Image (cartoon, rainbow, N blue to C red):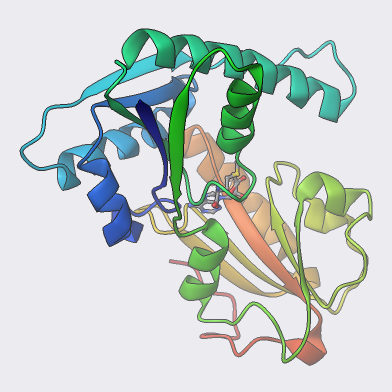
Length: 265
Ligand SMILES: C[S@@+](CC[C@H](N)C(=O)[O-])C[C@H]1O[C@@H](n2cnc3c(N)ncnc32)[C@H](O)[C@@H]1O
């Protein structure tokens, strides 16, 4: 039977990869990639570098396909993403059927970990539900951007016995994230921290975590929000893309930061 691996490769640094992931990489015959356009070519390149670095004495193939474009005419966000996932699942299904022989092993290299804001698992579930293609699959966990953020700022994510909320910039902007003491924000292209009215909050921000271009900034949100926005814009322009994640923390639960002042590296 065909076998598929969803391998979490960590969020940016080739050395975030686990021993379990390296063992899985060395069993794969065909790697499947989604081409997300020129601006995000760095992300595909990193996946290819990982294969070259960790796969020994084994021949493998790489199959790349273009990512379908989300339909901008669908105004409802969830409906738009659901349709996009359906389109992706049909493309994946065809690609697996065509490129992977019955006794072969294929893999998707998933940024960070497959459980966090990633559609690969949902897409695999859709293919299984359609019942046209038979395969077994296994997930290899990876280091998420949240763990990378905490490690690089030398902070714990939660206060003693407290909860943390993980959310998106979109949800934060609409005030849907509740009143947790600590909030992790991902997928924020709009600097939604500007919509947060609590002047006292601290922010621990990181972009390109684990990569050569990494930038870290931390301090009082009200004091450094505009600096983050400026740096974000500048880096995005320079590199053609940016991925950033941040923790918002109420001051009474301020994490023991490695540095309490703004720092940039
Ligand atoms: C589609 S989600 C993928 C998350 C990924 N599965 C993970 O485990 O981190 C993309 C978002 O993850 C965050 N992210 C991923 N890699 C990052 C990095 N190296 N530095 C900063 N943020 C990152 C950003 O918030 C970005 O918008």
